[in-house]
Image (cartoon, rainbow, N blue to C red; front, side, top):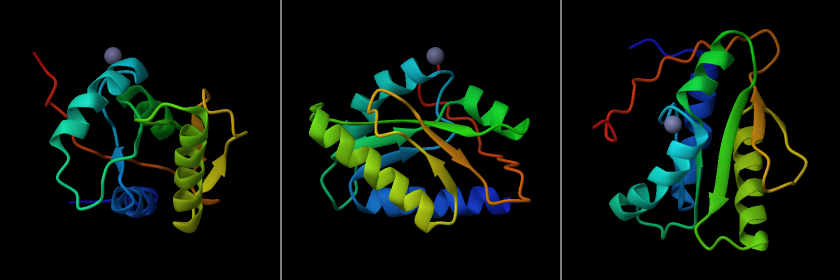
Length: 136
Ligand SMILES: [Zn+2]
């Protein structure tokens, strides 16, 4: 299956985050609020070797706008829910994305989404399958 360069970099970052116990879900559900709600279930289903500490995700709307030439907006947070752990998750997400070669903007405000852009000259062209686990 075709995978754009941008998607390969994103997958690399998301894999690195899952290895740290951060659930990473691309193209996940219709909106940020559905994605956040589903994270409790995702945590229960977690089979990773590392204990889950947080989550990062972007929704289908964000995939669509990224593919139209925009940035990608990542929701993120911790399961502990305190400010310090939320910040720790945000920073881990930023550094994994940067290590993968992506451009990241975030002002360390844990209530704001992390903005990700592909390297210069690259368009996202993300083609993730739709997640149907939460369909009625
Ligand atoms: Zn929704």
